[in-house]
Length: 335
Image 1 (cartoon, rainbow, N blue to C red):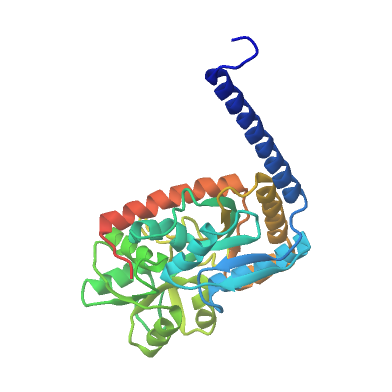
Image 2 (cartoon, rainbow, N blue to C red):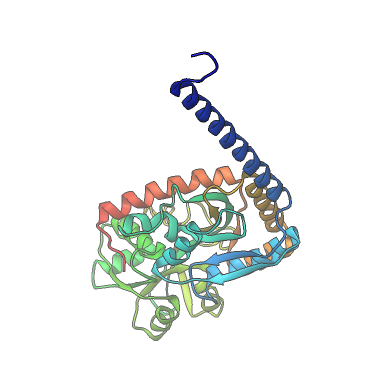
C-alpha cells in the first residue's frame, strides 16, 4: 500500500542501519586503537620470564629490560613466573590484554618444545602470540670434570662403549636433554641421562664426581671452566661460537645433526597492534646494538642476536616443527 513499508522493507532498513552502526563502531575502535598505539608506551611494561630469578634467562631479560627502559622512556619490570619449563609464564601472557604492556621473554622450551611434550597446554604458540624479535643465542655445551681422561666428544663416546657414562641434563625435555638425545643418536651409544630440576645441583654433583658430564648452557658453566675445574668437549651450535671460538662443534667432530641452539626472544599477545610491535622491535634492536649491553651479554657467555619481528616469527615456526618431530621420534616425555 502507498505510504507504508512492507515487513521485508522494514527488515532491510533495520539490517542496513545495524550494519552502518557496526561499521561506525569498528572505525571508532580502530581509531582509538591507532591513537593508543601512537602514544605507546605511556605506562610501565611488564616483561614476564618463565623461570626463577638468578638464572641465565632471568639475567638476559633484565639486561634487555634496562635497554628497553632507556629506548622507550618508561619502566620495564621483569616478573618471574616459573614452572613447567616456562609454560606458566607463557600462559599468563597469552591471556593478557594485547596492548603491548605485557610481554613474554621466552626461550625455546616454552614455545617450541612444550607443545610436543605437553598435551594439556593452555596456549598455542602458533596462534596466541605475536613475534617481537629475537634477543640472544646461547648454545648448549657438554662439559666434564677437568680430571677426566676424555678430551673430546669422540673420546667420551669411546669411554661410553667400555663403561656406563652418566650425563646430567637440566630437566626432562629441556634443550640440554634434547641435545644429549641428538648426541647419543649420532654417536650410536647410550649414555645414562640424569635429569635435574636446575643447574645448581647438577654442577655440584659434576664437581663432586657423582656425574661424568653435564649438558648445560654456556653461562652456567663459564665460571668453572675459567677456574680450570671443567673442560668443554663440544658445543651444539651449527658453527663455532664467537664466545668460545676454540671449542669444536659436535658437527665438526663427526656427530651430525647434534645442533641444539638455546635462544631467547620476545613475544606479545596475539592481536597486539602492528604499530606497537614495530615500536617494540625498533627499541629492542637499538638496545641490543648498544656496546655496553653487548659487552654484558658476551661476558656472561651469551651472543646478542637482534632480528626483525618477521624473521623471528619464521624461525619460531621452524623450531616448533623441528623439536616436535624429535620429541615424537624419541618418545620423550616431559616432567
